[in-house]
Image (cartoon, rainbow, N blue to C red; front, top):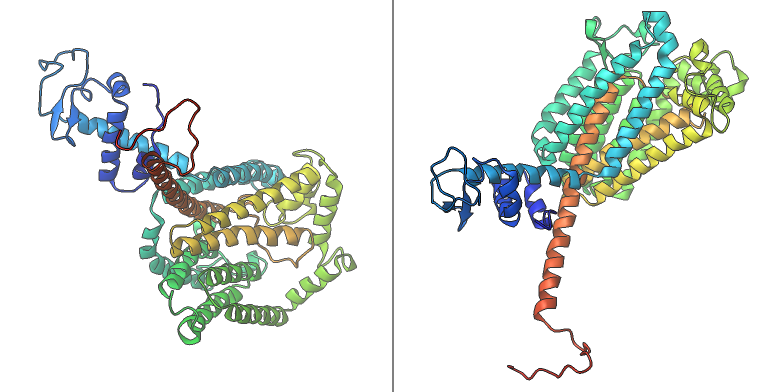
Length: 501
């Protein structure tokens, strides 16, 4: 058994979802690895081998099988080759899944998640100790949701993303209904407890749930499905642009009722990215962007506190103890961190100086404790994740995968940019969390689930690319073997072979 690497063709077959295809690939692998299968497979599995596609089964083990009356070369109607083929098929499926997984996407996600858990523990320890008697209160809850999110990521990575089309309309309806439910008294969390915003559902002892986070995933699936179905009509004003604009206005209108400007901005970016990736006209995209800007201005003008936020953004140090207090404290924390920070766990901001230190403004604590090095690593991580996500979108095997990967990548990358820009006073305060890092159970679990969908698209895109390369390599090999290369030089002393000789 000199060569244990499965050939690419078998891995391409094993990566498909059908069990019949995997078992067939497993039987071919058994034929290739026959000596190894004889040593590795249990005696009951290695009693039979396949001849002529499994029609005739003979015992292949050179060793006598204990407690068996069947000789090593006798025919028998057993099912050993089926079991061995099934086992090798599953082995091939695991190897193919590991090889097809975008290791950069997965590694960046896990690195950001691990760093986020550490920073949640550091930033929330004081508040957890004062409010709940345990410095690990917020950290423990975040770990639970991280485990749930990782489980969802693994499950969604294994399901063919094309099957999500069937669930997209129902998921969108449920998400919209839940977003409207937060506006109903005694169902949504009292706005007086959440600074006037109506964003969460009260789940009693289980805590709260923010339906807008679920809607980011379900509406991304639905809009990608909707745009894909209108492939030939998307560039039309009446059949493509107008229905899409009404859809965008409806979703953002619900966000306005919830007084959630940050989520509305993220939703707008996601929907615009999907529309553009689906082939919408540039003039229509510009018209949508203009409409979003007008809506943003009206949204700010309707509430006085948003005007104060905008004024605080333009001149943060004009009112450092009033409307600009949070931004000023975040800037002080970032500046006091220096190049390498004051050290993990040594932040001063978390001692009540910075409100929401473990949620929307956790990037300021990262800058204070890890300095410029830590903030640069976080920024580089999100940039690399965004690049890999768009790369997966470009390699997706179909239009639905392209728009799905584009929407999820835009969601995570744009939201991270908005959060970090808010903390550094580059944008007005919007109240969006930093993906994978900020405290928030529903946001973390659903973002990890979305990464499972993105990894799914990336893996299938790699399968398509590798299968095309395998076919091209095989064709090239056959051409090189059958067709002599014109102008090839002969070695000295080797006579020219006569035709037909």
